[in-house]
Amino acid sequence: VASYCMQTAWGAEELLGLAAKFPKQAVSGADFSLDHGREYTVLVFLGVECPVARQYGARLQPLAAEFEQSEVAFIGVNSNPQDSTSEVAEYQQEMGIQFAMVKDASQEIARHFQVTRTAEVVVIDGAGKVQYRGRIDNQFSPGVSRSAATQHDLRDALTSLVQGKPVATRETTPVGCL
Image (cartoon, rainbow, N blue to C red):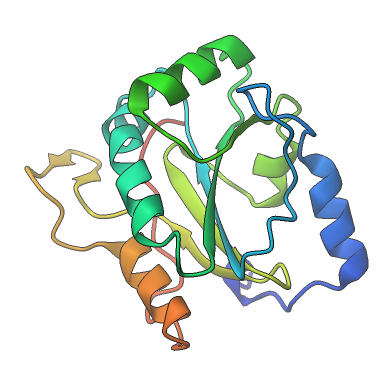
């Protein structure tokens, strides 16, 4: 089975289908559109109660700010049926996340990208092609909790993309809650 990252770029019809899976409103109540005009989109799948997602939550906003001027948009996605929209909004506020977060109540977005964990990330380009998917960094893995990450997979992938270089490692095994 070929890796999901290796799929070809989508046409306009597929992108419209993807955009239709996203809600029209963020959990904050603000209008939301996947069409943000940036070259890359980081979809960060987060869960309100997941310990790993809680560890990464507060660290994601500084990473988003680091790439804000570099044609990169971050979007938080919550696909957990047990998390209410108000709980996701509280999580967003508690973690200091300023980028949009949406509730994927039907889990269509998670299924579309074959997401299996929170906090898993998927980076897509303007054509909808997956450029990176997997973990944020290597601080956590099954049975391992480092005091700090030694590999920064998402940051490295974004740095390569904004510099016009290919991503060296396009897929890593995500860690976190099911």
